[in-house]
Structure formats: C-alpha cells, structure tokens
Image (cartoon, rainbow, N blue to C red; front, side, top):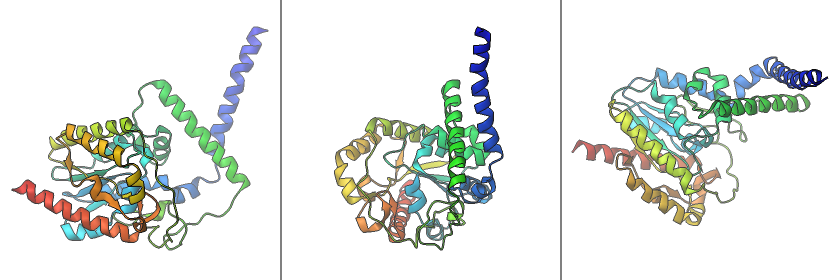
Length: 319
C-alpha cells in the first residue's frame, strides 16, 4: 500500500514534467519567438561583435545603454568601430562582462554603464531565457549550488509553459517593426551597431520617479567592475565606466544614495571613470518612457558628452 502511494507521488510530478516539456518542445510559437522575442537579439549582437575587427569599443550595460547611445555617431567621431552589447538590467553586471570576453583582443576598450538597480548576479531565470536562444550563454551563468540551477531551470520552464498556454487563448498578432510608433523591445529593434533604435520615432510617455536598489547590492557591482578592469588590463584591454543617465527629479530624490555610491568608487582606484553621476543627470524632456531611457534627443546629447569625455581621458592617458 505504502509503495503504491509513493509510486503515485513520484508518477504525478513526472507526468506534469513531461507535459510541460512536451508543450515547450512542440510549441507553435517557436519560430515566431525566434523572430520577435527581444531576448533572441543576443544572437544578432554576438554576430555583430564577432564580425567587428579590433581595435574596437564595446559598450555593455542595461537598457540605459541600449536606449541611450548613438554608436554610429561615436564611431564616426572617434574613428573606431563601436559595438553596443547592452541588453536589460536584470542580466546583471557579471553576465554583461562575461558575454564579451571571448571576443575581446588587445587594444580593445570596454565602456560599461550600469543602472543603480543592477546587481552583480542578475536574474538567472532571465539569463537562462537568453541561453535558450544562444546556448553558449550557459557558460556565462554562474550558479552557487546545484539547487540554485535546478530552481532557476524549473522557474524558466514553468514560465515558458505558462506563456504558451496564455498565448493559445490570446493570439493577438505581434508584428513589431522599427517604423511603428508603439513597440520597443523585439528582436529586430536594433541597428547594425547593436543600438536599440525602435523607440526613436515613438512618442514619449509619462512615467513615475525611479526607485533605486539598496546601496549594498550595487557595491558588489562596483567590485565586479574593478575585477574585470584588472583582469582585462593584464590582456591589454581597457575598461572604462560611465554613469547611467538619470532623470533629474529621480536623481534629486535619490541624491544621497547616489552620492554614497559615487564615494564608494574611490575604494577602487583601478576603475577608470569617464564622468560623475552629476554629469549624467538630464532634464525630464530628454527621456522616453522611464528615468533611465533616453529619447532621441537625449541619446544624441549623451553620446556627444561621452565622446568628449572619452577623448579627454585618452588624451590624459597619452600624456
């Protein structure tokens, strides 16, 4: 009797597991997701990065870099190829660095910029989603324990399964284009340098003030930046840091926290700062849909400032 009960207890989760996996494997949305899901842009960004000769500038960070840099303008001004490898904040700083390591060569420069809500570890569920499109990305995900991997894997697959079921009931067409005035995050939303450009002709929208993470979580990001600054310097690769653009009212609200984070950078003299948080404070009309996402004009102004700061830093290093 006990054996039968145990057998049923084991059989039920096995059946559920098989149903979930079969649904994901035979999903009718696979091809559509590969075409439209923003996470699938990792395929294109890696292709751009690997096809770009050295020496080159590689941009990494969250959506503030995706939205906020005109890489072509930067490339034309500096005479160096520029590749934008940024995605969204929840991938974390360590994943952002690890994704580019295999494509860097002596003489390359990495410009990093992370929103104040970024963590070093990132969201492993989101990282696994990116890896479902680009399997090599599994190498860039760090799990402290097997339990952590199993938990993240299960959550990711349950998410896939749930989304498939929901979409079976709601098959509203999703055919985003760069030319439309509503959609932002989809696979073909980037240009040949990797910049997000789908928002440039969208109307800006009102947004609430940002909420920053606790300073303790961002301290590990700063340590992470220093780690890669040191390790890549030994290979002849420079790492520089530029503070994320931040909407003025949100900045003023978070002024004390941002000051603490800025002071914390002083503990890590290896990190080369291109600017200060105050240089990256912009008025509301320079933003698109949240306090980190610059509009077309904001993107231009930030890029011009970044170009100038980069040139000044290079000149100082040459003296």
